[in-house]
Image (cartoon, rainbow, N blue to C red; front, top):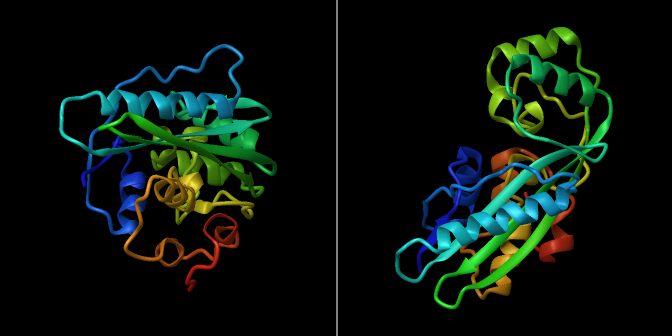
Length: 219
C-alpha cells in the first residue's frame, strides 16, 4: 500500500511520520485564494479536497492520498501567511491577548475507486499578552513569514499561546487523531499508538484524544 502526502509542509511530514507509515510527498499545485465571503471551515474543506484530487489524478498505481489545509480565523476573518514583516507584526498585535480559531480540513483519497473521506478539526487558541519587543524579536527571526496567522505554536522562543482548547497537532497543520479516525473508516490501521507518539513528540499532555479514538495508551 502506497501512501502519498499531498503537502510540502515539513511540519506535516514530521507529524505523519509518528504513525509509523511509509509515505512519500507530492505537493499539490492549486489556487489557495479565499473566495469572497468564504467562511474558514468551507475554505479549508475546499482546499483539502482540491489538493487530494489534484494529486490523486496524477499518473501512478493504486495509492492512498492524504491532503490537509490549515487556516487561522480571527473574528471570522481568514488569516493567511503574512506578505512581509510589517503584516506579520500587524497580525500578531491583533491576535495578542485574545482567542482565535485554527481549522484544519483533511481529505483521504483511494485512487483505485476514487472514494474520498473527509473531516475537519477546530482548535481554540487563546494568545498570551506578549510584548511589542517580543513581536519584533520573533518577526526578525523570519519564522512568522511562512505561517498562517504569522506564528508557529511550537516555537521555543516565542510561545505565543497562553493555553489551548483542542488538538495541539491541529495548530501545527495535521490533527493526528482526526487522521487516524479517517484512516480507520477506510480500513487502515496504524502500527503504533498515535496519542502516545504525539504526546511524547510534542511534550504536550493531550486531553481530547479519547473523544476521537476511545481508550488509547498515554504517556
